[in-house]
Image 1: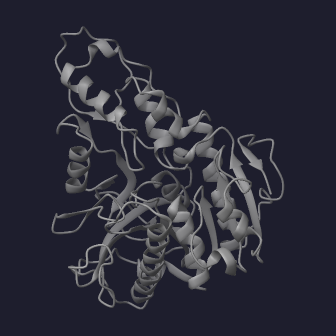
Image 2: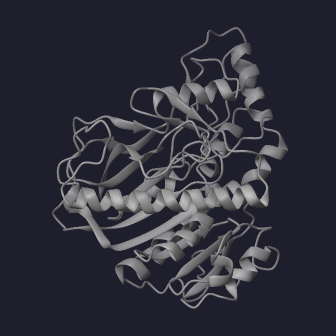
Length: 414
């Protein structure tokens, strides 16, 4: 992905420049979006403010157009563990799927409006300075049923992240024919907007090993519940609380005999534990997350892929080493060379755009390492798809057999 040419910082409106400096100082959390300016000639310092700043996500490479629908789900069998006054566990999910036609349908924003406003308030950015990025998914577009049911993948974000954190990979997988279901774990995620416009904030206590284990346990229960709701959709029912119409053909798109799961950070731990807990999940992938719970000693008998950053691997994560010794299915450990923890999120694409026009502190840039953003996005997209193609679709490209000279960014560790 080409990085826009830098615009002279002196040309920025002073208020905008101050806000951007404040954003950079926050350290750029998992869900952070940072603004950039399109390439163009530098302006004088007194030039008027010209519109909000916009970021873009890299376009997916597959041939399938992308539809998207958000669903509000209630699990009445559970109280909310993080807000005990809530009598039932409420979730928001998004289903991303190959679309037959997207003409006349609106693109879905990276965050919905109220969540985006709450996010800007949280990171102290004044309204009107930054426009939420658009995704390549279209709200409610009819599903493409011409090739029959599609394999289903689940995505769980990192602690404090949201279901859009890895949209770059979600869209890529859908563009190549998968259905991807992304999950917001309410009160673990930072801002979760519900259809009436209210936003539930993050309320989970400060992280300790016990809290982190409990959090993953809650996420696993969320995942099992979401799978049950997908079964309801496939059976012709609509589990959305508001009973908003589902996209045409969506029910026929779900091949629930071919299910995989991936996640970033704590989402990777969720994928592993959920596989142990629910045999409907046939293969899982952990994007740089330590593991928790019974999977550490029980292991897994189905494929599991570890993808790590430069300083996190089997040798220095006791949870990975413990679980590794109990894995009985196919397993492999790959490293994205010169990466950091958040290289596996959309920040890998968004932060370099901001760095072209904003003085980002080195501590923030370190969160995505020094690997080239365009190459790292291509590499992770390619290996993630090759993995699920092999173990969910049964199409083996042999990319996972050995290191490839085409992808020097990916190192085979174990």
